Image (cartoon, rainbow, N blue to C red; front, top):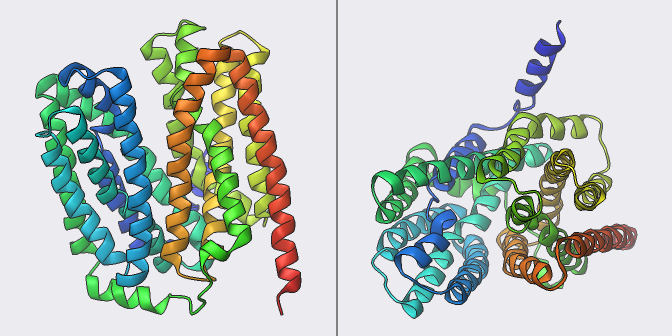
Amino acid sequence: MAPLARAYKYYVGSFDGLSREVWVLALITFVNRAGTMVVPFLSLYLTNRMELSLQQVGWIMSCFGAGSVVGSWLGGKFSDRFGFYDVMAAALITSGAAFILLQYVQGFRPFCVGVFVLMLLSDGFRPAMFVAIRAYARPENRTRAVTLVRLAVNLGFSLGPAIGGLIIATWSYGGLFWVDGLTCLGAMALMLLALPRKAARLNDMATRSVATRSPYRDGPYLFFLLCIVLITIPFLQYFSTVPLFYNEVHHLDEFHIGLLLGANGLLIFLTEMPLIKFCEDRAYQRMRIIRFSVVLFALSFVVLNVSPTILFLWVGIVLMTVGEMLNFPFMNRFAYDRSDQGPPGAYMALFTISWSVAHIIGHTLGLNLIAWFGFTATWWFFAAMLVLGLGMLFALERMVDREQVKAP
């Protein structure tokens, strides 16, 4: 068999064994995330249409992050109480209505409240969706199931801004709010048709753990969440401050910056599922994979300082992307395995909140470091932060090992 045919067969085979329900969840997530078009253009909308200052925009984005934190916490809590299905449906229908109504909100303070409420409603979906994956995927397929949904998220976020730009050009900013809202409602309709509520609730109850350990008393898990925040803050720079570096230091225009960032999505689409299958087929130790991914993240910042050539920008984006593909699916798997010890909604809520916290801190921290110390010092700072995260992962592994030794 030709190498290309073997590669194609392996790629297709990496999707084998995933349940129909997991595929439906991925499709629902794709429709939902492809419709999230307001977010990439929110700062432009606030400055150009509402004529707000950059400081006011900063406060609105803080409300955006705060709403995400509260919404994720409530989504996890309600998932444990009412089941993931009802929470997902409620999040989709209420956030769909909130997107449509947000276009009619005027003024700085009302918009702060509106964005907070929108994200509170919208991000309740995330922990419920993670609980749904946990319910529908067989334990041995959890990592690949999460990876499939990640592919859907990446495809949705790649498609959304392109469509959003077209809607602004041909319709208006108001069209974005309408399309965002209607796609949320479309995702809910798809869920109601393809995932019957009664069967979902039965599946949810059948896969519930009888363990009752609270994630707030799970020391290794709380330490793991701190690791996530420390590792994710540098990673997020590739989507906020690194593009500024491309433009201001290497003088790349929007088209070439788009090519660099687009390579991230293309590599993930083509190689993430086979890469995860490759790691699982060879039974690589998961914590070692996560640690290796953090090394790749750190190197992606180091190469930005090592050479001023554009070639090393491509090396950096490839290192970051491979690190991303290895890191987040196995981080998810660690969270899933810990959630077997207690209420899964509460566990996955804290997991998503750690991401929200990283978003709240990361973008502002990166921009201020660049303003105070410049790009070179900032990249060394984030590389050092990742080295610290790497050391914490070694400590986390020892904590888990000691816990297993003490277990009866």
